Image (tube, rainbow, N blue to C red):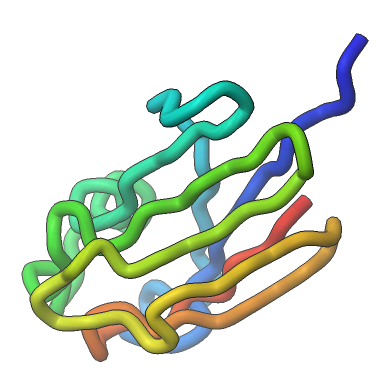
Amino acid sequence: MGKPGPSLTFEVIEGPSSLVGKFGWFLPSVSLDEGVLVQPFGRDYLGFFLGRFEGLDLVSRAHMVASFDFDNGDVMMTDAGSKNGTKPEGIYLHRIGDRQTVRVADTISLEFRSW
């Protein structure tokens, strides 16, 4: 039996008060290469977990991309060339429990957690 792959969740830590504390998770769906899966992350994904909110239209459909390296247990999030930007443009989570915050489209701040 192989080791479990990396997982990623996110929590709203800054933005509209009705969203702070809400969370979501990633289910990678696209195989990029053997052992690496990717999941686009953007307006539809946020809307699914958080519902409609002011500023959602500033988030691109494919704002960021999450890459899951199941062989090494790593997760990387990078800006996908979004119109309104991501700060920082990329994050890397290696160890279980790693956390990093990303500001999306200057609208909402999300804390990503690896587990």
